[in-house]
Each structure stands twice: as C-alpha cells, then as structure tokens.
Length: 340
Image (tube, rainbow, N blue to C red; front, side):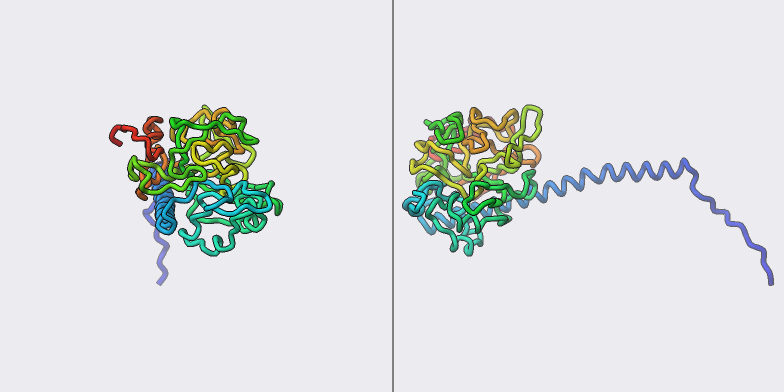
C-alpha cells in the first residue's frame, strides 16, 4: 500500500547555536593547551633530571675507580694523558673521562689521550663528528643539535651541543684573569669547585659537604640580553663548551685557580641563574671562544637543575642570591649559608 512521505520534526542548528558550539570548543581547547604544555614541560624537566642523575652516578663511579674525580678539563699530561706531536695542549674534558660510566665504553676505548686529544687529534674529532649522546643534553634545550668545529684537523667536525657544565669555582675565590688568545683577559677563572682545571679532587677534600656543593649545573638555554632575547653568537649558541666542542679541556698545565687559559666545559660562577643582560663579551666572561663565566640556565620555568656532590638533584630558583649560589659552588671555603 502506498504511504505518503512523512515530514521529520527535527530541525538543523541555527547559525547562533553553531557559533555558540564553536565558541565552547575554542574555550575548551584554550584551557587544554596550557595543560598539555605543562605536562610536556614536566616530562622534559624530569628527563633532564634523569640525565643529571646519570652524570652523578658516572662521576661517583669514576671516583670509585680512580680515587679521585676527573678534571673539569685537562692538558694531555700525567695522570690525564701523554704529550704528543702537538705537545700537551688542549686535552680532554670531564665529559670524555666519564664515557665508560655512561655506557659509552666503545667510544672511550678508541680515544687517544695524546696529541691535543680534545681538539687537534684527528682520530678523536672523527669519532665525535655528528655523534649524539642523549645523556649529555636536556630535551628541552633551545640550542641547535650541532655546531661546526672548523679548526678540527680533519676538517669540519660537527659536534653536538651538550647542556651540562662542570663547576670549576667562583669569582669569590682568589681567581686568575684569563690570558688566552681569545678571551681578552676579562673573564675570571676560579679553582674552588670540584671540577676545576687539571684538578684531581677527592671526596675527602670537599669539606663544605658533598650535599652542599654543586658538582654539575644545567646550561641548556641561550644567554639572553636585557630584553630576554637569545644571543646565539657565531656558533648558534654561546655556552661554556665554546666553538671547539664538548670534548675540549685545558690548554695549560696549571691547576685550579692558577689556571690562566681558556677553560672549556666548566664555569666559574659569576652570575645568577638565567642572568639577563649578557652578550658575546670577554668583559663579562661570556665570550664565544671561550669565556669562563657562562651562567647556569634552562628553559624550565623558574630556575635550573643542579647536581650536587653527593649525587642528589636540586632545582634552584633563578632568584637564588648570587652569594648563596657561589657558596654552594665551592667545595672547601666554609661559607655560612642561609637555609635553602
């Protein structure tokens, strides 16, 4: 039997209703995005802290094996290496010495601690060309992945930007002004830190207490000018590792506070965490090749991660007073600090 079509009582959305729905969705997305970003930031901060914990385990493992800490940077000389055709200049950094303790033994076994091992040794610069070691880099870092070491004898060796720096001392030491080829004498080298240049620090010499002494600090954001804008310099980022990379150590045999050349991959604490108003300048100790006084930095909200001498982690605020930060960066000066 034929039945005529029936008409539905349903009606479509009016334009106003549709706009209201779109507005509600937009509001929900606006509320959700900051929450997602916070989760991502928290995950990156946690990953960064895990990297630093691994560094702490590695440094303590090195001490157990050698009855001393590695030097912050060393010349190729006993007990760190041997003189080669280029003399003992520009040996390796602490990041090279702990490679076996972060599951990078194959790299370490190929390393030659001679012939300018941290710069001029062709074997070594070839090994690190485009090499990435996850433990050495905060995932939230704003740095490029690599930079060019055009001075490498093998040509254009691309080295990764690492984001953790050893503490050599503070400018409240009796410091030495740098006198190397490129820093103009404005930067300042200290020797009271655990990872000072050509040092062989023992745990027993950390008389301020290992839990009260910063061993390694985070340095994962650009230095920034007075307006908070990044100052990338000629290499893509200005950091304590300088233009020659994370493997470069010391170019002089002098020890600790007496060291008077460019100190790579360490910092002598002169500025607050995430200090603003700096530039590519030898007078502030932040020259590209290479200043002694690059500040601790990070893109984590409010401060940066610090690895203490006992292997514990602290997240220290950007507002931490400079004298407190410096007191925590020396190992044996007996500073009386307020409760942290």
